[in-house]
Image (cartoon, rainbow, N blue to C red):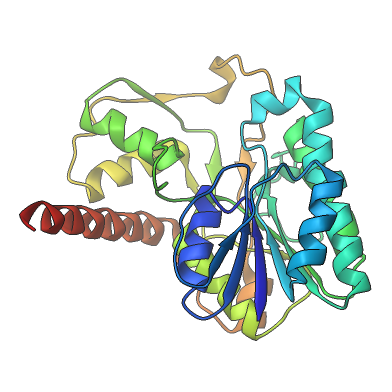
Length: 304
């Protein structure tokens, strides 16, 4: 099976390339080259260049494309509406149209931010969408052409994990601040349902082997506030939480408005895949395991 992965040098893309290349031919694309290895072929270009995108699709002839590429800086999207639209919607539509014509599949990684965050409780797939910022609006636009496909799948999610080089993820930033005992302002009034990129990679492999189509929420089986997430992370990593400040998101002056409730209900996908999804605390424990394993490997290399 030939699998294309966009945004393959990003946090999720790297996890997918690492995991799926053990069994499948991976055709990775991003603006810069990431992880290399057996069964991995790279082609670096800008996805918003539609000519190059079509050339890549014609060359690769993928059975499946997992579309991870996105501008994850929410405030940057506010200043670059055209770029966000080009990547999140227009490039997605080109892929969706091509793959649909060629009886291939597209897995589109969407976001939990498509709702306004005012609901009490977790969001289900049929809840009314009301995105508050350009990032969420354009990601939602990208869902449209995927859902029109015969073999399109939209996964709304919120991911956490370790990056290979950049050290810029939410969890990495939090661990750095906890380790350095630097003041850490975390929101008590923003909740989310985080899923590690490692768990999501495993779930996507299950979907590759047991295809599902349409729209699904794919996250932890519960939700947690950013503040409580930080405290639990400190506990699991055996660090002090005395530097964590409990603050409201209303006290911040972000360029882009953000929803307070991003909790996702995963009953639909859990039932369909017959899979017990991890909790938010499980996600932190998984990250601790990955962190310890990586440090162990680095120490072994030093000994050698």
